[in-house]
Image 1 (cartoon, rainbow, N blue to C red):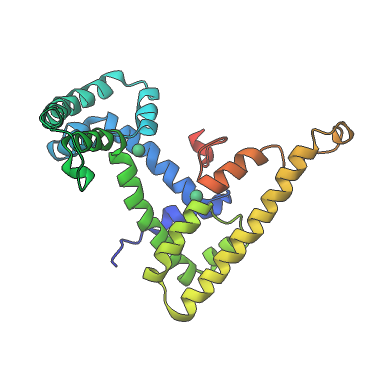
Image 2 (cartoon, helix red, strand yellow):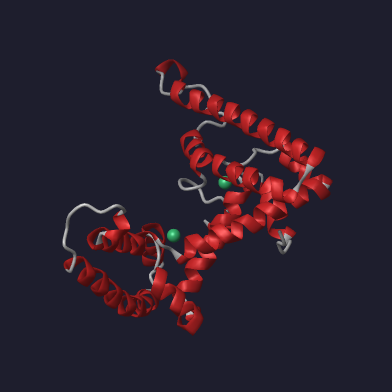
Length: 249
Ligand SMILES: [Zn+2]
Ligand SMILES: [Zn+2]
């Protein structure tokens, strides 16, 4: 597979030393995408066609709504809705013409097909798609750096690892980027990192809960004050607490 190798964002994210460098990259890209879709690019014909067909998920509409560019969002929605209302009308018209009864496949039933189309409108997202595609490229770059850059390898093996969702991405990408002994060595390093860092978080989280015992009230928090956020982010990918990139605060 051919991926353009853009090493600088991956190196920079690793140097930040957070719970997951890939989450830090995803968050930065996500904020850029929000700006992009509220800006002038959404009026470019090829972008507009894609937005009209797909729209955005709840999470990304929420972020765009929070960005306070109501005109940008309104113009984009106007274009999207103009296409969607015809599409929805067609689906419902077909559903209305259905005769009911039992169907071999749900897609043969016009009412189920219309329901599936409405759900698709709710779930499709230009930003999620762009992020997923971009993150495959960054995971590939991550693996390339692990193999070719000893400083990156050292940082990874001494760092806080990655979240479980990005561990999954690296597991999926590793056989495309590495082979033989190099693949085995990476998978062993990933296993160790995930295991050791879940243990570290377990310790932090346990101390967080013990701090609520009055006998520990005067003892230091150590690294436990934000253990709840970091555990959620480790399991799910970054979604709560402090921004993963300090300058995006
Ligand atoms: Zn992550
Ligand atoms: Zn989305």
